[in-house]
Structure formats: C-alpha cells, structure tokens
Length: 114
Length: 115
Image 1 (tube, rainbow over the protein chains, first blue to last red):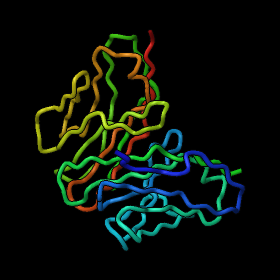
Image 2: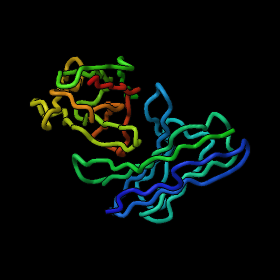
Image 3: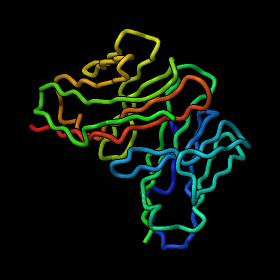
C-alpha cells in the first residue's frame, strides 16, 4: 500500500530559488492538505484542497502556491525560497464526506533554505 | 478560530510506569473530533487514538487511553506500562465535524522513556 507519497525527503535550497514539493495519494481521497512543522509550533496548515480544481488557504499560506489538477496529486510550490521557509513539510489526505475519517500523512520533507 | 494548547514541551518517565500528557483546546463547536498523534524520530505521523466529542466514554487503545473532559475542554493522553518504543513527539489535534477536514495541532510534547 503506497498511501501518501512525498518527494523529496530532503532538500537544500538557496535563497530565491524555486522548487516544487510533490505529494501523491492512491486512496481516492477528496481532501488533501499541506502542513509545515516548526519547533514549538506544532503543525500549521499552509493550503488545502477539497477536490480537483478547488484549493484554499490555510493558516500560513504566504510564499506558497498549490494547484489540484487531479484527485491524486497536490504539489506545493515555493516561488522564491526564503530562510523563514526552512521547515519540515507534511502532506496529508483523507476522505471528505465520511464521518470519523482518519488523515494519512506522507513521510515529510525536510527543507533547508540557506 | 479553534486553538489547541499542549503546555508540556517535554516529559520523561521510567520504563513500565504511567505518564499523562496534557492537552486543552478552545472551540465554540459542540461536536468535533480530537486526536493524539505520535511522531517518532522517523518523522512519520502515526494516529494513536481518537475521540468523538459526542461520545461520553473515553477512548482506549491497548496501553493508550484518554481523559476527555468536554466542559473543561481538556483531552489528556495516558500511556500505561511505558515502553522504550513510546519515545516520540506527541501531538494533540482538533478537527471540526462540519466543513473541510482541517486539523488544528498543539505545539507537541516530547516524551522520553528512561530505561
């Protein structure tokens, strides 16, 4: 079972560079989301999507773009990386219209911006 | 907006003993879900236990149980017979029933198990 697959697992960027974090799920989940994890702050929601073609901002969206062209994929783009975006990033997915549904997480991407 | 607070950044316990991790939350909703997630050094987020707010009975999963106090908006996790494999970061999380499946996380508690 693949579940939620995130790539890459580690990445070092220079300030101003752009990159895309990939996220794919094979469970036909409608809901997908991106979180960032920083020490002492838990996980904070960046962007989320309730289906193909529909995205919305979370708590900390600045500096990030997303799109959802298919049910399976939800990439996160950093347009111009800044040191403040050094963090661990998690993608998660779940069913939208079922009660008591569990969120499944990818293994995370550790991003360092120098 | 909903908030989740974990006031214990770090906890430690002797192997085989019991430890309780605290979590409080704030919401105006009457129905919602609460979760505890475990994050070992591998970074993987693992669901430990979940509680539905409309259920008065506290959830239990083997050595893990919760003390859910809805009026006090408190949701603590008790780990019995602690094992070395329980060492991890633990996150408390809230999710509303209605609307999108947004999870709101606490700051996390790092649990150390002493042999």
